[in-house]
Amino acid sequence: MENTATKNAHPWYVQVEGQIYGPYETGQMLAYIREGRIVPDSKVTQNRSGTFMSAGQSVLFQPMQTIDNPTPRSPAPQVANSTVFLVMAEISSENGMRFLHLIQRLGTAQRIGDTVWLLRSNMSIEFLREQLAASLTRQDRLFIMDSFNNRTAWHNIGADIDERIRALWENRPAQ
Image (cartoon, rainbow, N blue to C red; front, side):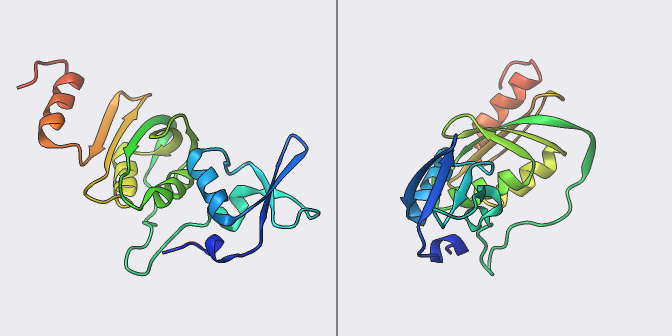
């Protein structure tokens, strides 16, 4: 299902260091978001001579939801201090944008590669895995490392790799 941004026929403009770029179609803008070229703090508008706003406040960053598969919204269990998670996700399904929107709502996210993000949040690693995994299909894979607490969590990795990760993390030989 498309988010509301894809239904809007007005062109988009982006302001970078006082320079205005565009016009861009909504599809181009969403591709730039997927690539990490437009982030929530980027300045955008649909009126070249109008007021620019943060992209995160625009319809471009509104969550994509369907009636059959809504974005998880249960309250996050909080931990005492925030932590930085390394999140690696191989998303081969059509859910890439949904995952991107979700990770940006779960804390302060910074994409550092095609499949890698750093995420600062004060939720537990278990809750984070549950929330992110809900946006994935059986063909997608997810690995999370809590950099402050030396913990890992994963989804759809496979039994053989599961055992190797556990052995590595527990400093024992794999079986």
